[in-house]
Length: 192
Image 1 (cartoon, rainbow, N blue to C red):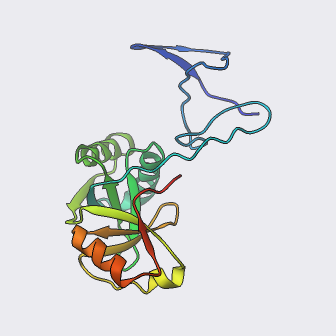
Image 2: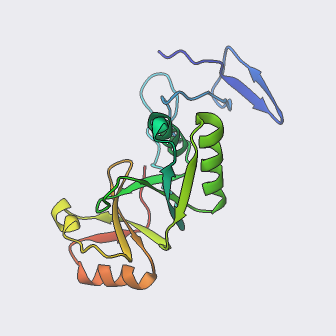
């Protein structure tokens, strides 16, 4: 059993708060962290749907919190935005400072993240674009992945689900790393 706070039924520009819903109804449920994209609510035996693929980002940037007194708000806001599917967050395993790397499909998403962090969490941020243009999830043993060479053209990182990822500055380096490291695979799609 779960108590839902103010579920509503959207219709065009309007929404109506409801007390009861039926199979097939489309609902809006305010999320306090209990739900993720693709979750289903049902009664009885759990329903298992095919996993949703994670989007393949094309733009990458470091996001810095410029007010260190608001680190908790920064982390909470970034987590919320990732749960909503607005951005993917990862951390460079070889970086001296643990700063989040944002991965997005379109550059406008960077502006959305910064604006929402400022408006909803009162956290000012600055963005540093990275020259990398492709990302691949890495499959293989932890030992083989940890032995991948560190280069400025390739960033080895962990995503928020603790999966291994690699950011490449050019397709050449993806091919080079794939050829030189046959014990690991660089895959384009990861399922959540």
